[in-house]
Length: 118
Image 1: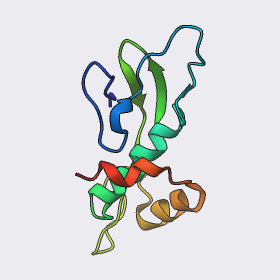
Image 2 (image 1 turned 30 degrees about the vertical axis):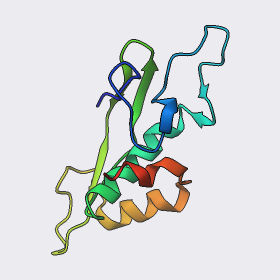
Image 3 (image 1 turned 60 degrees about the vertical axis):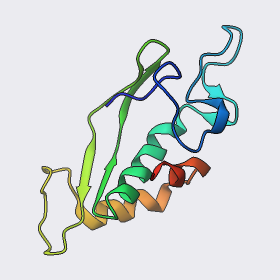
Image 4 (image 1 turned 45 degrees about the vertical axis):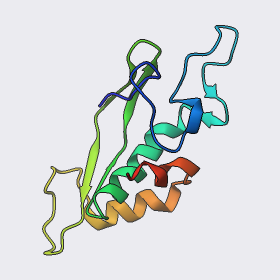
């Protein structure tokens, strides 16, 4: 999964700031405006849940951010909420509705997650 950089375009909800624009080399690389880079994968997880209308959640994202490629994220867990009670549709790490509930117990929603659903 690769994120967009400012050269590739903007994501809704970030206004004129763009998405993870490169700052001067003297600036702190871990924060861009009021948005922490570490918050972006959590926002994407929330977006995946909203975009799938509550049927799937992509979470446990691991990876790195760099100015050349944006995010390079690996090793996702996908929880699928089945209306028929089917389990492990996405492998052994798929915990279904229980996994989704566990994610939202600790998730802190950031403002623009809901604005990506366009």
